Amino acid sequence: MPTKILFIMLDGCRPDALQQAKTPHLTKLWQEGAYTWTAQSVMPSVTLPAHTTLFRGVDPARHGIGRDNVYQASAAAFPSLMEVATLANRHTAMFYSWEQLRDVAPHGSVKMSWCRNADYGLDNDTVVARAAAAYLTSEQPDLCFLYMGDIDISGHLFGWMSPPYIETIEQVDAAVGIVLDALDAAGIREQYTILAQADHGGHDTDHGTDLPEDMNIPWILNGPGIKRGHPIQQRVGLADTPATLAHLLGIERPAVWEGQPVLEALL
Image 1 (cartoon, rainbow, N blue to C red):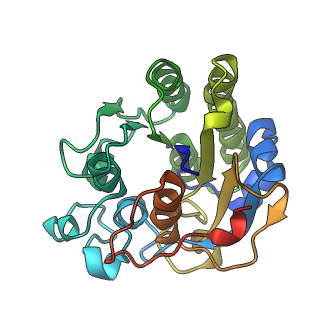
Image 2 (image 1 turned 60 degrees about the vertical axis):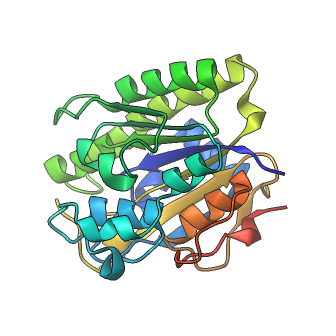
Image 3 (image 1 turned 180 degrees about the vertical axis):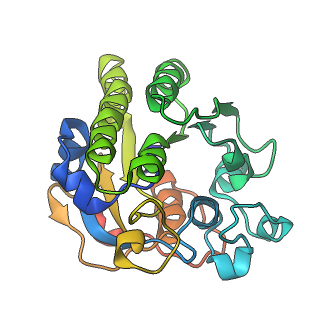
C-alpha cells in the first residue's frame, strides 16, 4: 500500500559516529526499523554527485557531475525522483540549507522548495527542521526531502570523528526530533515512512575518496510496512534509494534508473 515519505539526509554522517553519538530520535528509528551500517556512497564521494545519484538514479559516470560539485546539463537526461513523483500527482517538498541542491530536480517539479543557505559554524539544521515541521503538519506532502547539512560542515571544520563532529550529530538528532515530534503531535506520524541516511562519510577534514571512511554510510528505513529491528543483509547503494522510495510511493520507476528497491526491509 502506498505511503507518504519523509526522506532525511544526514550529510557527511559516518555510521560509526552515529552509533557513538547520543541520538535518541535516530536510534529509535533504526532500532524499530530496518537498517544497515554498510550502505555505499558513490565515487567521487562528494555531496552533489551523491545527491544526483540519490535523485536521478544513476552513477556519476553517467550523470556527469564530479568532485567539483558543479551541476552539469548531462544530468537532466535522467528523470529525478521529484519529477517522477510530481508527474504521478504526488505533492513534493524540499527543505535544505545547501542551495546547489536546487538541481536534484528540474525547476518547477517541486511544489515547495525552501532553502536558507548555511552559515558555517552556526546551527542551520534547527532552522530547516522547524520550517519542515510546520509545512509537514499543515500541508502533509507525499514526499518531503529534509536536508541536514551541519554534520558535514562540522567534519570540514573540526575533523570527522572529532568531539565537535560528534556533538553536531547530537544537535542534528535534536533537530530531527523537532520534525518527528510535530508529526506525532499532529497525529500523522503513521502516515509516513521515514528514510534517514547519509550521502558520504569522511576522514580527517575531507571526503571524496574510495576509503571505507568516506564510502560507508548509514541507511535506516522506518514506518508502516517496514520490518522492526531488522539488520539489512543485502548490499545497498545510493541508486537504490530512489528505487525504494518510488516503490513505497506506489509509482513506476524509470527504466533508466540503475538501482533496485530494498525489498528485504519490507514486511
